[in-house]
Amino acid sequence: MTGAAAQTDARGGQAPPERSSVGLVAVIVAATKGEPRALTIRVPDQAPGRGDGLPAGPLVPEHATLERGLRAWVERQTHQRLGYVEQLYTFGDRDRSGTATLSGVHSLSVAYLALVREERPAGLAEAAWQNWYRYLPYEDFRQGRPRQLDAIEARLAEWASEPADCATRTRRLDRLGLTFGMNGGTWNEERVLERYELLFEAGLIPEARGNPGPALPNDPTGVPMAFDHRRVLATAIGRLRGKIKYRPVVFELMPPEFTLLQLQKTVEALSGTQLHKQNFRRLVAQQGLVEETESVTSGAAGRPARLVRFRREVLLERPAPGLRLPSRRAG
Image 1 (cartoon, one colour):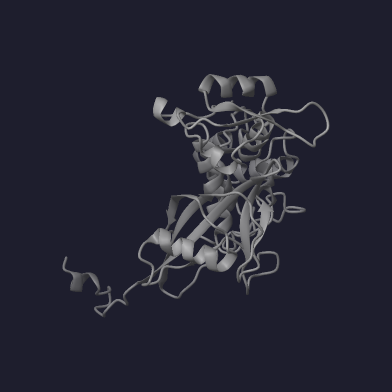
Image 2 (cartoon, rainbow, N blue to C red):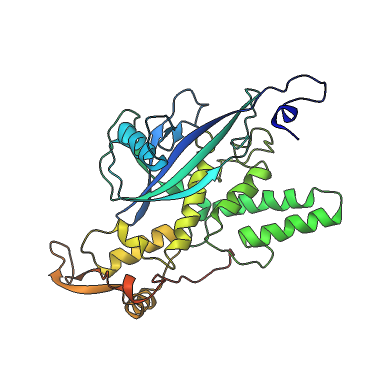
């Protein structure tokens, strides 16, 4: 079929060309005092309670590359300096936020993950650092099983039982086991996006406007975000949780010198898990990830702790230096 023929609709007329727009979105992550932080901005003209968003802007001709365009928007909106940056994902679904539009514009978003040390935000967009579990509270197992899962799992069980045919019910139950560890399944901390998308499909989150489902009390799924930015955040969390197991990216979030306890708290914050102190230190030692310095902590109560630093030679010694974390059952 020729290009001209492809543009002709079934009525013999000329089909309107589909327009596309490309946006750039940044998930900027820091770990401060043992808490995972994401840099957000205030997005105007959003529904009540949905004003939090991620730094973002359109790709324009003066941007030489996608990454340069991203850095330009982040600098303008937040004044945050970016260090480690990697492309995360390209989101191209026609209706990613659940609010269908008839505008004919197919929107693409190229998302990036950036790891930084927290600085006081400035810029033009009312930027603020937020704990990322504000948006996905059910992902945080550091203090045990999150209470939000009780309400979420009860509604998911209802959703799984709704179809009339047995095959569909079985498929839904299987997905609950794979994502939320229900029915004897295992909770995999990396499946953050899969859990979010299942909640979206089941209509349990405010972003699912086209499929709202019954409301849940106190919204245990977390604070909604503008557009599909909570989905982008979920993608970034899952990517980072997986990556710390085979790449030493966690050290991008650490100061030049730190204690082993600070490192453990940072890994726990990112992974949403509680780690055994001695097992964690044994793992760090076995991997050869850090080396001791001559310095110790000062000004803190208790016995001074030895400061360590990232041992960069490990990057040359083996291809996948990281921190393997145990899986857990959701219950």
